Length: 374
Image (cartoon, rainbow, N blue to C red; front, side):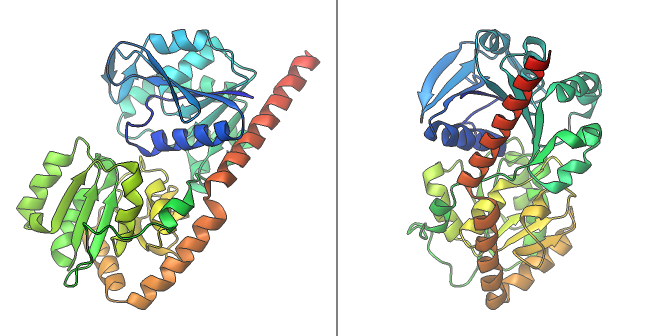
């Protein structure tokens, strides 16, 4: 099967969707399929093509970036010359979605609806009529968690929604060891945050909670909010208890999970649709403290089962949940065991790859049936 994934970015660009696209594409390639990823080139206007772990990665020339949306004339040109069986769109990326809607490459189109668009609401109002057409044209729409069914943009597409939770290679997180350069702290437990430093991650609320928490915090990631949040840490008096680790090589990330006592995802807005880093933490045996956004974050981390779920944008509630778990090692151990069991059952990479491939086959069969009927 010839498969073409379309999104705006691809690793080494950091991000949950970027990493998901890579894992899915590589997993499909390992099963003998011909897989390509059509994205944009963060380095500028030249198009670069490379073979990466069995996946042909086409980084189409990027002209500019407006409201987090890379603009590229080369991307639709590359799409026009492609001959895939299945085109897999990863929403939100309007340039890719509109290119496929206009050019209609492949026999079947599958779209993964990763999240609602929150911050770029004005742009979405302009795009919404076109988005409706894109969604209508898709043969199947994948959602990563049950709460995504409630999205207003998916209301009229319920019959074509397919729940396929995100998956990761669990063993690399489960079997890692604590890194020697970050030893256990006898006096202070360790909290861990992993993610792009963007407004919706809510790290500022964790920083505001930290004066009430007897712990240090490891922050993995970079992003546009870093300078502002570093200043907040200094103003709050907790700067000395926060280690800003920046970008961490993917191979080193599992060890950091094993260096922590709790993982915290203090997301503040519904742009955080799933929180795949929670799956990584749970696979490593870490209880999770997250927030109730009405999205997939509390589908992954279940309150009282694998961790704690608290209201968003509430530093007091966040501190209370974290302190309660830090004070109860037996409860942390219970939650950790349940977390590892949950991810093994629902979020393992081979399970996700097989579910997506089965959906492709069904979409292709349906499309071929329609073609014969016409």
